[in-house]
Image (cartoon, rainbow, N blue to C red):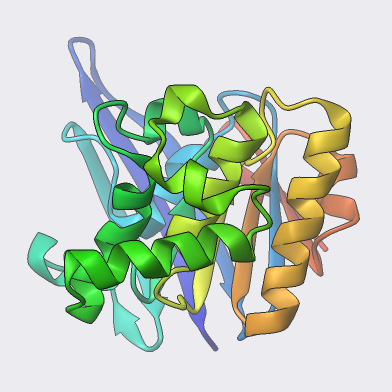
Length: 234
């Protein structure tokens, strides 16, 4: 089993005390499998995804068990998580305009995980980033690599985020509402691209969405969250 989550809970502490955002989450994911996580806004979808990545806010406390490739992630040091994050497990964030750094060229950002996890030189990593941008079917990958995020369309930025996520060949990719704010045609292309990459590489996928119709056509199994609790699984 690639990922085993048991009794996952996330508590946030604020001025009024602690509140439980995610409660008792239990699910598993096998190699190459795709899991849809569905729920309305505020149901705990994104917080669950962030807990898996070790990216919860500073005022959050994560408890329970998250075992990835047999290794317990809850309580793992930040240094150890940095070695996993972007390498064995990667995330496609919800809004690429805020997830991408506006001060750095797109190619340099796609290349960064290759420098950190594969020890490539920045020049070699940038060349590989151009190849990755071409792989996710950007029309002019060379131009996109030298551009800043604001110069790309929403769909192009999302493709750049996907290129960054798959660069190191992760075993698990978490896509947090990857089609938010995209029109229906671009949304379909992005989802088809993710499907194709998953089939090609054998990676597992967790697709987070508020849209049941989106995950219905792209996932093997679905769990439904409401108020931080898994209400249904099937």
